[in-house]
Length: 253
Image 1 (cartoon, rainbow, N blue to C red):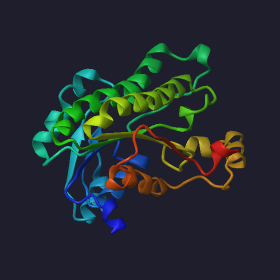
Image 2: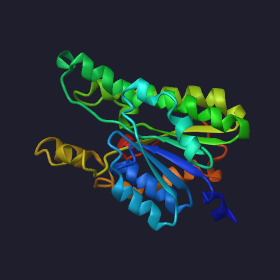
Image 3: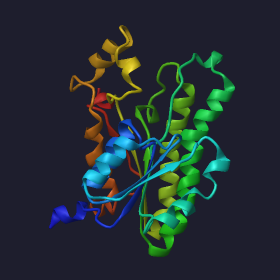
Image 4: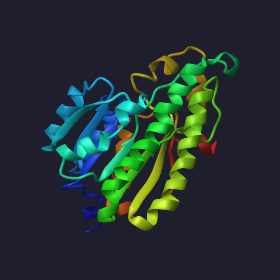
């Protein structure tokens, strides 16, 4: 049956930044599809995500790691593997943003953002495939953005990182698809989250964004879950290196 291809029973999904927002929505969606979930956050405060995942009858692990610090990332996947039955799915979602004119952007902030969004995704993917290659199976889902295609306004570090994650996705897919690992990238548009409230409520930028979205609204976090489940499942087994916008039609305009 076609719906059986979307089931994730018996699989373990690692979601970075799973404590809130889009990460929490994807973690919950994966759990509803049958996956056990590991949430990696800087503070390890994922109580609501735990409640949602466990409400599906799935196991949940909360792992603390500041992904901007390479020393903390070292051996992270191996440590997770010691606690879980397997490493099947990795969702590289953790990130933050900063907004400054490029000529004023603090270099330390720029480098830290690249470390979280881009370097950590590469690092964790390299760690994860050591567990995936022996079984010739694995799903890596990188989270890009509309800024994987556009430059944005006063977000040079974010745009650079999200363009980079799209290129990284393609490169890893070329290298790892023969070894049974699917690497793909989701590029969300404007979603209503705790972090996006400042932008949505801005009296100037908020209406500008709304006017540009063809479907006429911002997305809800749970509207990302279905695409994540698809890419994590056997239904997408022939997808490698795809960069997929989910944006209410933004890029079509």
